[in-house]
Amino acid sequence: MKIDKFVIAIIISIVVAYFFPQMGASGSAIPLDTIASIGISLIFFFYGLKLSTEAIKSGLKNWKLHIVVQSTTFILFPLIVVVFYPLVKDTNQEMLWLSILFLAALPSTVSSSVVMVSLAKGNIPAAIFNASISGIIGIIITPLWMTSFIQQTEITYDFSAIYAQLGMEILLPLILGLLLRKYLGEFARKNSRGLSLFDKSIILIIIYKSFVHSFEEKVFSSVSFFDLILMAALVITLFFLVFFITGWIGKRLHFNREDRITAQFCGTKKSLVHGTVFSEALFGQSSIMGLMLLPLMLFHAFQILIISVLATRMGEKETAREIEESRYSTQHE
Image 1 (cartoon, rainbow, N blue to C red):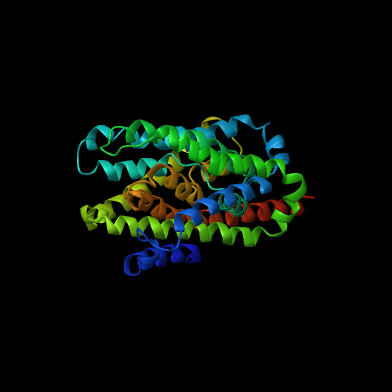
Image 2 (image 1 turned 135 degrees about the vertical axis):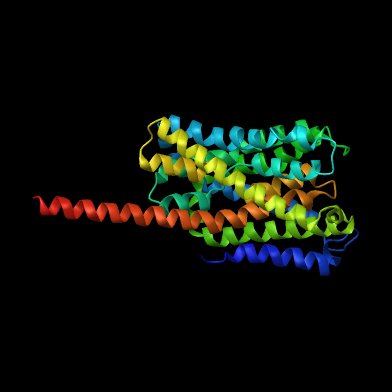
């Protein structure tokens, strides 16, 4: 298993935030908030430029698969977490639970979902469709899940301002990117590697300043080592539970092998890009933003390591099966 360089960069950002908080501290001369805000808008502008409308149009036909993937992403995932809310309500664990709910309510990631489905020899066009549409749906659905439970905490939020920020920073640039796709789409495709590096740079800036503020307010002083281990265990359990449920649903609905793989891989992925952006809008005005990102970063590292292994094994098994079938048919001709 290869260690993802971006995961290492995230860890370095957190370490730098702890030992060198000056750039992200309150009153810093470097306007990281402004840089992050502009960067978020550009991320979704480029996302609009790269969005394949052809894949979305052709993907509409396989509606059963799409319903399963989007229901898994935005209904099954959060509901599994919400079931445990009565156990943590008004306890010291409520904020940790909220951070896991935030993870569960996020949309699927685009690039890695498609790559993993490709490795496992799944339905690639359906993966492109679901991963792309998931990011758009999440702009509306993710804040709705969080609104109900954030209101019950002691932190005051102005939700009209949150939706206005999401509209200005995400939705408007996304629509603008879609409108200009005809003229700049080719540029975005040719420079996809550079744009991906830009996306990751903005995410690292957001993570850095989030953890600086959390360290300043000593938010993590209430989080014990046991809590971190428990959080990691819950995140891994949540992934495997959803992975096996989507596989079971795919069999019950008589999906073929390719569609089952797509349902499992797209339905269980969570987007770090959307997570850091949404956390900026939902929690950017409070010091708990770093805490809210913890389960997401654990999940991100886990999904890259484990799903890549699962995808590779599935792909190798399918390749071996195809070779065996080819040999069998050759022998009987």
